[in-house]
Image (cartoon, rainbow, N blue to C red):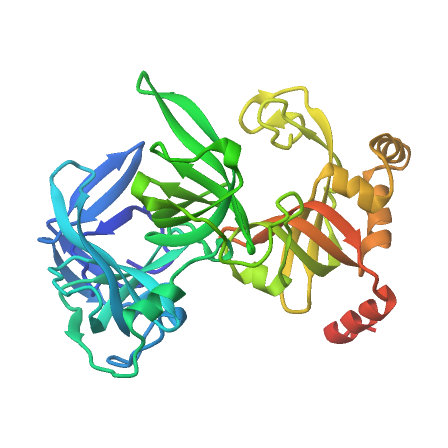
Length: 444
C-alpha cells in the first residue's frame, strides 16, 4: 500500500514468541497467529509457533551490541546489554487470555551499583541468586511506568567475572525504595514506612461480600496509600507504627502510587525508624525542585517553587456535576448528561522554573486565598465585568510572579500537572524576573 492513502484499521497485539524482528515501522507477514475480541476491540496474539516474514525493515533504538550500560540509564524500549547481579528469581506462569493454555516463564530482579530492574525470561533460566551475569540482547519493555527486561531465544546470558563488582548484600541495601521513587507497575518492592492510618473496607463482587485493608503511609520523601488483601498484625491504637514491606507491587490510583500487600509475611513491624526524628504527619511537605517533579513519578505531599507564565481562560467560576464532580460543559456532564451543577472555583495556570514547565490546578480555598478574595465577591465581579475581564485581572496580578505551591503531582506520560491545595507568593522581585524572562525569550 501507499503511505497515508486510505483508512487504516488498528489492532493491538501481544508477541508471546518474543520475536526480535518485529520492530517499529516494519511491514511483516504473520502466519499462525490467533485473533481475540474483547469488549468490541480486536487484538492479535502472535504465538511462539507463529511465523514472521519481514517484508520491509523498520527501525528501533540501537545500542552497540555487547557494550554493557548501567541499569539506571536503560531506555524505555529497545535492545540492550547489561551486567548485573541476580538478586531474585522465581518460576511463574502467564495464562493466555483466550484460555488456550499457559506459558512457563521466570521472573526476577537484577541490580548494579546504579539501580535495579525486573526481568521476565521466556526461556529456561537456571542461575543461582547472587550470580553476576552478562546479558546481551535483552529487550526493554515498559509496563505502565516501569521498564522491564525481557529475555528470549536470541538473548545471550553468561556468568561474568568482575572482582570489583558490588556483592549482593551491598546491592540489596541500595534496592530499598522510598515513596518518592515508587512508579506504577513496580514489583518486588522493599520499603520502610510509617503507617499513619488503617481501615477495613468491604465490597461485593460476583454476589460475594469481600474485604480489603487500606491506609496511608509516609516516609521522609512523601506519602501514599497502601492496600492489603490479607489480615495483618496492625493495631490501629498503636498508629503510627514503623514497618518494613517486602515483595510488594505498586499500582497507581488517580496517578498516585498504591502499594499492594498480598501476604502477611511481606510485613515486619520495626521497633524504630531508620531516619532521624519524628515525621510531622499533619504538615509533611517535601520540598522538591520543579524540574525533578516533572521528570519523576506521581507524588503526594510536595512543595515546589516556580514562576507563573500563563493563566488559562477557563480560570474562575466553574460548575461541577453533583454526582461525579466533573466540570460541566454547557450544562452537560460527560457521565450523567444534563444536570444542575454546583458552583466551584479553580485557577488553571502554567508554572515555569527556567528548566521545566508544569500545569498548575489550584483548588477553591487556595485560589481564594492567593487572590485575597472570597467566593461571593468573585461571583459579583464576574457578573459585573464578565469572565474575560476577570481573567485579565488575574493575569495582571499573577503573571511573572514566583509562587510556592503544595499538593500532589500527577505525571502520566502525557504531561505533568500539580493539583495544588496551597499557594503563596514568594518574596521575589517580580520585575527582575519578568526582565530575565523577556531577555531569555528575546522580547523587548
